[in-house]
Length: 286
Image (tube, rainbow, N blue to C red):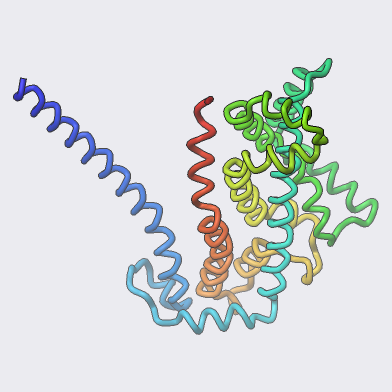
């Protein structure tokens, strides 16, 4: 009996070592590319042309100054534009998706299942399919070079709605909503004061995903924003990379890429606890 228990403990220890070894390797692999970007942002264009290295180049401040004072781009304006679009999109997307999920989960109406299936069907359609018509509409009515044109369409997010509805099914008892109605609360008060706090982990998860997706979005901003004062960070990175050979500086490109990632990291650190809680608690129906 003792021998069997000892063998079981050894097998458990070996399996844990293997699992932790794989996790450490994957974590190191993910961090390696981020570390490589930091290293490359500290190297000059000439050093970058010599090849790969893991040793810093000593040109970090120089690349920062060159990128910040580049005459063809305006980094502060680009960061501000990207932050406005990303934060507004994240807030509106998560709130209205949660509100829609609440409506289709709590209310019983005639075409409830049909509405739910219709939203899921839209989720299967690539966003690029409707891009041509949307861009033509924007040009026809003079809606280009406006940041809100990028924000409003992002509110309709079927994937976010689906996640929110699954989370509600796992965490929100209908009896709680009924009790609030009996106490005299209206529907918006119930949603904002009772349901939304319960959904805080799910909201945090979708906020970071929506923020990152909007922050890194290049396709629609490149089509609708052609004035320098409205350009976002991804457009500026592409603009630096497409510069002619005499002005091309890969050190500035890596520096701008590093600066573009920092806001995403800050948002993730702020919401990290809620993100982990949301991923775990929404996965099992209580």
